Structure formats: structure tokens, C-alpha cells
Length: 200
Image 1 (cartoon, one colour):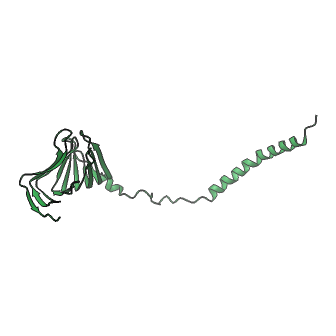
Image 2 (cartoon, helix red, strand yellow; image 1 turned 135 degrees about the vertical axis):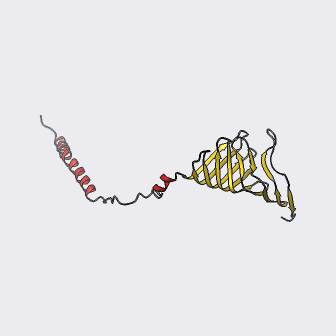
Image 3 (spheres, helix red, strand yellow; image 1 turned 180 degrees about the vertical axis):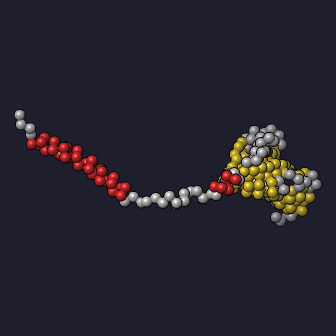
């Protein structure tokens, strides 16, 4: 029985490729390793830009944050440039915060430092704090206590504020919901003094 010439050619081609293809692969792998760039083990890791010794002696996090929702549905978020653990829960530095109530009203918070008091469920803004209310008032105080349970921001001591009506000072300030499902109000109390400036 004679084998057709086309089948003989096909068989020879397969036999040649069985030998030739592995040889080509071996040559490619050899050139890959031969011309590969040498790695310098002394090169610094590009993303290791922190001082490891400093982090070990003084543990902290950068670009830290806190976010949560209060019992009445307000969202609270805090972003900090740096966070360090403490016995009470943690401390943050260079802080920006946002409190948004269910009615869409936004209140901005900022301070140089913040402590997380997990026992009392408070965020304590310290070292000069500022509150920017949606009604145009900018309130400055030595500190604010921000509840993580319900919507409540309370000043630590006296405040100074500027707003649509002028400048005012007061012994105390609180931002809270007046009753269940009621409005959120910014209330100044104690000795309140207003320097009325109608053109502001």
C-alpha cells in the first residue's frame, strides 16, 4: 500500500517541528536571562518612603479616618492627616470633619487635634476648633465634643462666632436635634453678646 505524498510531507513536517520548536523556546529563554537587567540589592524600595525606626518607636497612621451614622440618621465623617493610639481610644491631628443630618444640612468641623473617647462615645476636637454651620455661622472654640451616638456637637467653654447678623460671643454652644424627628438647631446660651452688623 502506497502512502500519499501529501501525508509523507505532513509527517516529516511534524517530526521536524517536534525538534525545532523546543530548540527555539530554549534559545528565547537563554536570551531572556542573558540580556535581563541586573538588580542592585542596595536600591531603595520605591514605596518605602517612611522612617521605619520612627514608626517602630512612635507608632501612628497617616491619612486616617472615622465614619459612622448616628441613631437619628445623621452621617459623621472625620479625616485626619495622622492618627496615634492612646489609652482612651486614639488621637488624630490636622482634622477635617463633616456632619450631615437627614434633612441634607451640612456642618463642617476642623481642629488641630482630635481624641476618640470610646468610653463616653465622643469625638473630642481640641487645640482650637472651628464649626461652619449651613446657616452661615462660623463658630470658634477651644474645643467641641461630638457625639457618635446621636447628633450633638457641644462647645468646651466659651465661643466666638461670626454670622449673618454680625459677631457674637457666648458661654456655651450646642448643635442638636430639638425633639425626635424635630429640626436641628444651633443654640447659643449663657452670657450671649451680639454686635449687630446689618450690612454683613
